[in-house]
Image 1 (cartoon, rainbow over the protein chains, first blue to last red):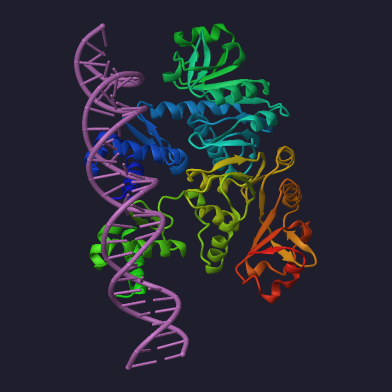
Image 2: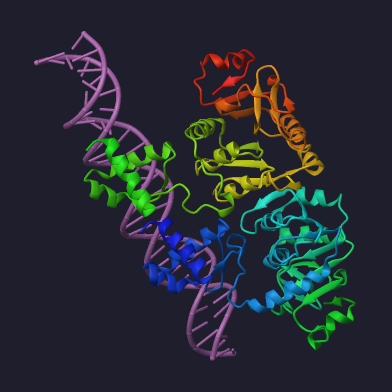
Length: 249
Length: 249
DNA sequence: AAATATCTTGCAAAAAAATGCAAAAAAAAT
DNA sequence: ATTTTTTTTGCATTTTTTTGCAAGATATTT
């Protein structure tokens, strides 16, 4: 069996099941675990799926369906992204970066919402393209294949000329002491600049991300104005955030 | 069995199975592995399939949903885009804008070509994303939904910092007296700036576009260094262009 | 914290591809 | 019909790609 055939079968199975398991697949296709793993890496580099521990999940950018990942509570994401809609008002200019959460939020924008959205995420630009009333501005820069965003000096420079109403920041980790953290250095630098270009900064956190810390720090909590969570605003685990003056939605 | 028949059978099998295996095929058709391999190379040159390690797959095997609707239905476009490959050399930086012709050219970049491609076209960025050796830089700006390109001041400003080896300009009309013309004003302004950022400007013209004139002028012929056409370089209808010192490919 | 599962890395064997060459076959020219 | 030229084919050699394995690192679960 040639590699391409295998990869196609992987994608097909993924579209059917929404998620795949590497061990299972290697048995099913009768090749070593390593080959499957390498296939999945290649497919991820092409932006056709998203690798997770033990397997892979469909890339919603392609399927335009909500992802149902390993360990990600789908209902929670839905709840969260619906709550996040309260952040937006007509005729605002919003800065949104990459990440699946932001993608799902954009997917759910009501048809009559009139926004200008500035983004460095290609998937975001593509979903927003289908929205009748949203004007999209893309930040230029070096295209990062896996994350499907633009990065680098050119994006940074473009931000200098901007002042937006709200920045909806994607992130990996959120901790009351350390602040907002990320897995990718270059992106973290860009996010710092983005935060400085906005009147208000909001983040949207699934419970999993709260109280986790990743490698690169983006900013302290005091730079965050608003936290959207699926928990009740009164939930005691949010005390640390509420005490620092962050509005909980 | 003659070569042509073999090749016909290869294409038929490919259309049935979506993929073929060279070893298998050589046994099936009772010829050496090398002959099959050479057949497949020929078929790939004709743009009828895509060669991969171990066999070949149909052209649009794993390609992106977003890029659909760009299928080549026209023999001339195929011929033209294949000819255009001569324009590129390893380690160059190329500026390419939107349009279907440029899209098809990018689609056919050989997989060992190492380029940096700067573009304002999202579909282009997406096909290039699947190429292993091409680095893509996106120009930022207001996203034009229908053309799927970025436009405006921000793109203009980004160009000021660039100096590229080659600009492959998309266009609507080409006339020996009027020069290069376009249907969209804003885009024509951007293209003027792009031309000024490049050491060399090339255009790729299907016969239909030659001797047609559209509303907005982009530039005079003397700004064009190279014209790729499906006609023979000696064709008398190209005299006007050749006389102005444009290299015909 | 231990146990289990999964991931990463480097390596070597195997499979397939590219290259150059010469024989065979086909086509063209005489 | 025969010679010349061109094209096609198969083979041997080198190079590249793919694959599976093993050992250590990392992550997840119990």
